[in-house]
Amino acid sequence: MDIQSDAPTTPLSTVRDNIARSEKIAGRPAGSTTLIAISKTKPVDAIESLIGEGQMVFGENRVQEAALKFPALRERYPDLQLHMVGQLQSNKADEAVALFDCIHSLDRPSLAKALAGAMDKAGRRVPCFVQVNIGEEEQKGGCAIAELPRFLADVKALGLPVVGLMAVPPADLEPAPYFALLAKLAREHGLDQLSMGMSGDYETAVRIGATHVRVGSALFGAR
Image (cartoon, rainbow, N blue to C red; front, side, top):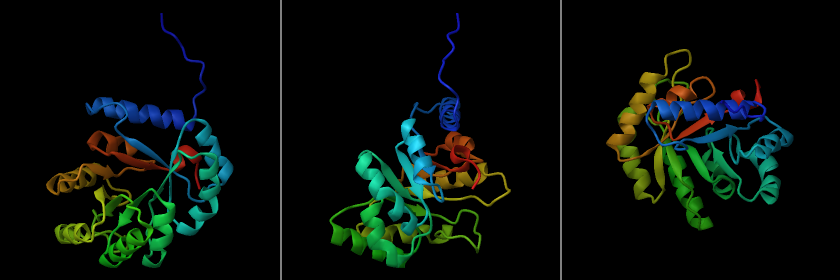
């Protein structure tokens, strides 16, 4: 006899179920993908609603906005994790190192130097993903694919803890080839973490090996 759960379906439970199914399809261990709830522009009460369902990893794309919302939240929820997922200005490095648990947008030498200095001053090593301009789009941030080997060598020489690669595929194109390329680049450089996949394509990303997916509108609704 089938046992039906009385738990209501929520956007978070739907996303979690989709991730679990995608992990299973790919033959990956259950729970091997970290769901980052992207809370940019969302109020504290919306964040706390997800926390109430057990979501403890969030992402913001602006230092200023995160600084307004998360210090008080951390006091109430000490296990909260906060990831920086947007473009980061070098002059915000000190604040970012103090505020975030992970930075997903390391993409240029000036930022690498600023972050290295900020981490040295703070005595805190914040894991970083190197952002790759996987679609070679002029309007997007990210290290060029051809420059990736040199850039990785430079940031490691600065002592930055690089854990993986991040990318945003071109809009309105099939994302799978871009995800596969990012996974290939990570393997070539001995990196085992991949930050890729958003609300419209996170299931595909998980099947191709994403360790971190950045999901906003599928959890919070349209902005």
